[in-house]
Length: 260
Length: 171
Figure 1: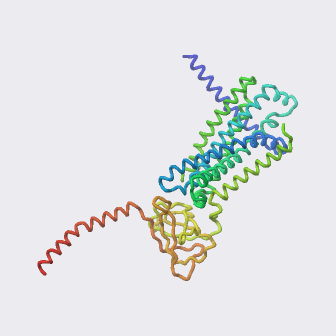
Figure 2 (figure 1 turned 120 degrees about the vertical axis):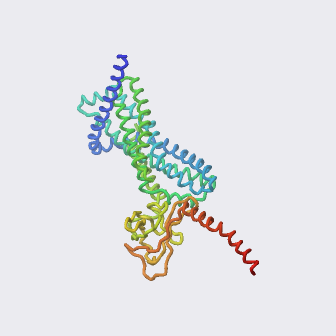
């Protein structure tokens, strides 16, 4: 009994310790961000590995998600003779929800895990300790550029996802199923609002970018410096950031769209 | 590691693609190009009942969108809904005695305001008011009126026929 209580207490303390460490870590990283702007090349190299290399998976999934939306939406709407609303269905679901969320999940799997493994291995092979010996702050030199790169890439990836998805839905709806081209676009333009839908989608993707990259770099930096520890940290990154994205999506949606 | 020029070009292309996607979403998908408010003039209209009218609902004349609903408020002096319309500044020749009616687009569609031009020589300007308004049709009221009129004419019909019969022998 006592043993159970003790274990519970230890788990709880460890949880709060990690939570606190994570937030302090975020604070230090944010302090290092202005310095990154003066070393632009570091940032560019990280945007390459975080953003550009995630581009293919985001493009391909965006097209297919849009095509599926077009197909499913058409099958439902055609019963009501409302297949002209297909553009609205596809665009709203992509811009409001699927674009930011699915892009963030893909981003966590593609870029977040890579970030964790990279930083974790740097720690395991004592490169981070070596930097500290040379009076180079690894938080500023290694972590901050990656954090900023993730933060900048995520909204762009989500926007690309949504845009490509709309084109995929257009291809299936107009190209294959015979929805009227003009009605598809004009209904979409009439119903999708720049501020309420697109801007809120961008805000969502910025928040997801911060959270996913934060979890990824923190897990890497905090990993147990063994091969097993790095492996576990990578798994935790994907699991935790996916959960965080889905949970935060509900909160953000409730905050943004509750009055519509 | 890649050649640093490749990296730079790749990042540049990525950022350009992302911004182009955002631009496309803004221009092609959203209503930015269709009607951008702000440069129009505002007129008010009072309605007995606005039904399900919402802010940003379209304002049309002859079916063409000329503006949108800017705000909806309740006037507790006259117990009417006070609707502010934002009319695009391109259309300055709307007569002051135009009628504003709330209609529904399609069977289940959104509600919008249709303006019907009057015959006045003076035109609406900033701060003007549409005096002639027609409220939204509320389905329950319609059904209620229908039932009421049915109930009202129901007992009458036999009475009328009886009266006819009664009148016949007299003639």
